[in-house]
Amino acid sequence: MARQTLNVQRYGSIANTSARSAASRRRGRKASRASASGDNGAMDLELSAWARDWSDRLGSALEQAIAAVAGQLPAGDVVGVGIATDADATSIVAFAHSRRHLDDLIAEDPEFAIDAKWHLGEWDLDILGAEGVDDPLEPIRAEAERAKRRCSVSSVDPGTAPGLREFRRTVWDSIAQALTASVAAGFFEQWPNAVRVFLPLDADVSEVDIARWNAALNDQAGTAEFRGFLQIDTV
Figure 1 (spheres, helix red, strand yellow):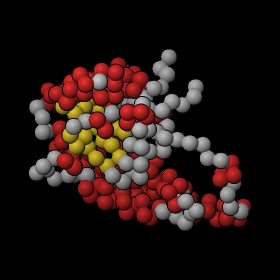
Figure 2 (cartoon, one colour):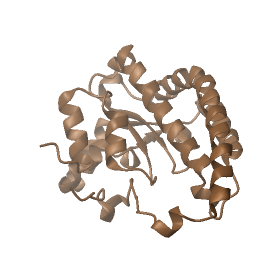
Figure 3 (cartoon, one colour):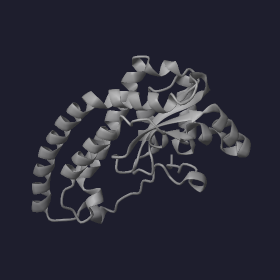
Figure 4 (cartoon, helix red, strand yellow):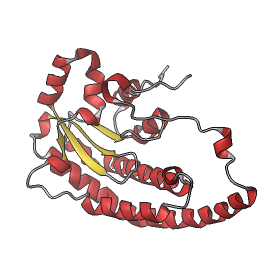
C-alpha cells in the first residue's frame, strides 16, 4: 500500500519521509565507509549506554510533566494527554487537551474531528505555556541536546549523519517505552476520558513507526482509531 500523508492541507506532514537515491547511499569510497562503520559501532555502544542511564530519569520526568499540565484541569475534563518532540528529538514537551477545546474544534470543523482528537498540535495546553509550573522535562531536554551533539559526526549533510539518525530513533524508542511502562503501572487512569498520544512532529518517520510507538498506550478501540488518524489500513 502506498504511504499516505497525514492531512497535509491542515497540519503539514508529521511523517514526511522520502526515498534517498541510490547514488546518495553509495556516496564515498569503500575505505571511508569501512572507517565510518567502525566509528558508528563505537558510537552505537556509547549511545546505548547513554540511553540506559537517561531512561532511568525519563519515565518519572514524563509522568511529572504530564501530571503538571493536565493538572490545570479537573480530571474529568481532560480528553487527551501526551508527549511530542520536534524533528530533532531534543524538544520534548508534555501536552493536555481540554474537553471544551475539543468540542470547539469539532464544532468549527467537523470534517477533522479525528484530527482534533489525536493531533497534539491542535491541543490547547502544553507544559511550556503553563504559568507558574516548573517543567520537569527541562533537564531531560538538556541531556538529549548534549547527547545529540556527541552524535553529530562529520557528514556532507550533518542532519542525516548515521549518528544523528540513531540518536533520534533511540530517543523516540525510549519515550515510547517509558509511556508504555506508565500505562502498565496505571499512571494514566487518573484521566479516564483521555486518549494518550506520542508524536514526533514534522519528523522523518513513517506512520507505521508512529503506530508502533503508540500501540500499547490506548485500549483496542482507541488504538484502531489512532491508526485511522494515521491513515493506516486496519483491514
